[in-house]
Image (cartoon, rainbow, N blue to C red):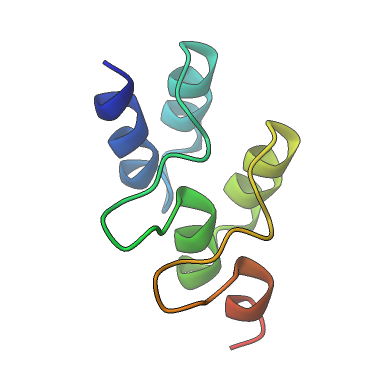
Length: 79
């Protein structure tokens, strides 16, 4: 169940903020990572989803977590 909820985080990163809220309220792991160790917060940086990034951070998303390439979210937002 948590894997599905974690993967759901990626689905809602772009535009479906209400789905993100529902998923988090039902126990999604905001720090769930894919095979490259990227989290939903990494994808908010790539997609420019500021509202979702703010919500992820409020829910305890790790800002300093690096993916397998060593990229951290605060570096991605500068690109």
